[in-house]
Length: 328
Image (tube, rainbow, N blue to C red; front, side, top):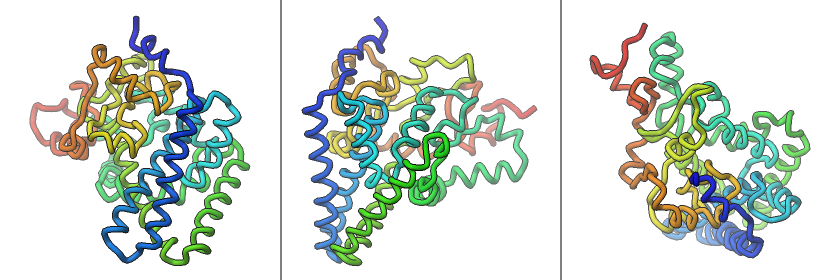
């Protein structure tokens, strides 16, 4: 029996669990805003509130994400309603997010469909063949300030106001999401004044940067998986191309089990609230790329995919004679 077949018992929504986790997420999010507003100026309370805000926002993104896969509630209508409404918190228009993310799943590990992935990855050959301006672009794109701060904040807070493929999924989705987001942030300002708005801006910025780093590490570890077109093996791309981020129970709670992203890619019908248990129960059949905190931080250094070695490498590796294939 394949591992995918083993996951089928977990690939069914449970409305009671879904509602419970939705309530917990709302408590984290709105509780954080209230505490952060009242405690604005108190460094410790603000820091704790930012962490709670991260929990609420990341978990809400997990819920919206599962709704997009039709795996959170048993009802498609409930999935769509909650998915649309959650966009006010996640800053992601639901139907555009659903379409773009499903493209990512369909082309997981496919070098020929890089436009469908969150982070641009070049092969060593692409980099070697690029012009000096092309190399400068890619190095700038992959630099720490760009990929973990400037880029994420721009994409989530600006670009997502009219995201990729929005014309395919419908402008109503984008207009409604932007209006809801404006209402949420405007309402917070009207009720809590400048401290509420300032806290939300600070907390959202931190959340975006941490969230994008989390997604980056999920697919950009040293032994990840990439192949071209017909050579892509879906199961291997899912299990090897997605890491298991081993940072403990609180990280699992905060990210709604994003750590077990390998099984999610293998079977996207598994709701987040069943994903960790599925991973535990099938652990004897899995050989995941498990990343500790130190290994997570080390993922920053991997910049290029070397097709000959079948792994990610650093820019500095290009200078080592004989380590990589020469440019033609």
